Length: 509
Image (cartoon, rainbow, N blue to C red; front, side, top):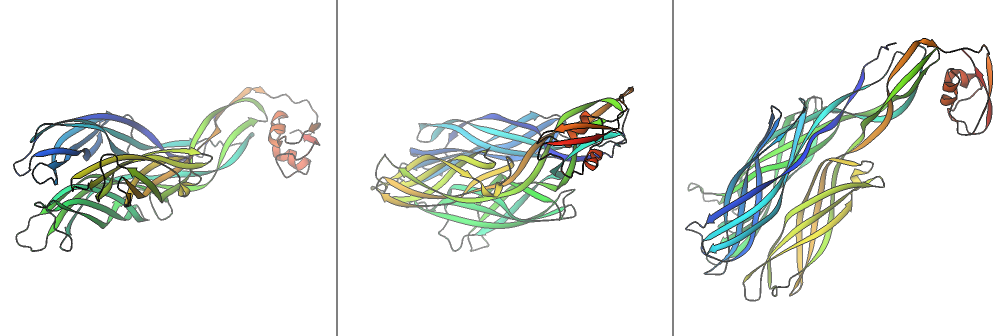
């Protein structure tokens, strides 16, 4: 026997691809004429930047550039200088069944870099970085709901979050940053850019975003003396992106990724105000959910014929929440190679993040790689690199057990010299993104009715049954081929689970 269904269905996020590939970066660099000779290398850094990500024809193609930055002490005036060289990279991944509505999340992680000076003007560098790629699509799941007739069904109520929108858009932000009130910018030694969403409003398939881009520079103010300075700049932005299915009633989570950026001195002979030209490509991903109570059929039987119910594990999202947690970590860095007379800058080179669920709470574990640029008592540049672990339970992710979008970054770093060999550091860390509660339930996926095998009737109108505490009316009715509501009515019961031992009258149909 076949049943007519009302075709109830929902959508849930489905991870089509979650992988990582290693990219090698080999650079043979000769200093340009305007760079002085190298006396000592302070730090070599790999900075991978994505220019594009494109999924078509079952292939995800990632294109980008890896910037190799070398910070060193020059041989004449013993000041800090830097040089850079870029190496293009590309990576493809095979992707099956991504569907039409998908988002592509990427991140990079520098694994290692070895830098060797062959001469005061020539460097050879060998390094590698990891390129992570995740493709999230949406999967439609039908809920089995037959036209019951003589089929008895047991329903359980769950809270289900239906994925209504799964969208992504890339866009460029360009800005001219005035530095007229700052110390002169002669040469940029180090730059860091991060971005995040501060507010969002959804109306009729459009998502209006407000966000901030944090820009940090460490630079030379005077090439002759080697004086340095820092610049922190907060750039607000707004963007409207198309998100089909999203509206004012959806619960929305976001991810904001800085794919690539460029900061350069702007040479404009017509202007007497010094400025920096800033360009960045951002990628915003968003999901919108509608959450409501939903009935799921978890068991069924026929009162007339033998039957064989089929079951399957129904996986669904039971709740979503936006994560935006800021906390402070206090650290102490000890310096073993000389005394520190002056700290020039402390910055977070990288932040790694892993998340796990324990006792119903999401927690984050990670590592911050801090870099300290200083001068010793002789005024000679000193570079110290230290890694620090952190762990944090995320209050804003309460009730969720999995991250779909997660980002971690250092908002600010403050410090004080404790003595000649140690620095006390205060890091303000932000973890943001979107979390979900993944749930599962064993649900009915179908019932086969054997109409050639009718159930026998013994002819009795009532049967006495001695029930024990904790037994369910559903199980008793099923075992006696009667309807649960008749059993409740005949025995003047309201609850489906017995709270004490009881003798029941079981009516027959």
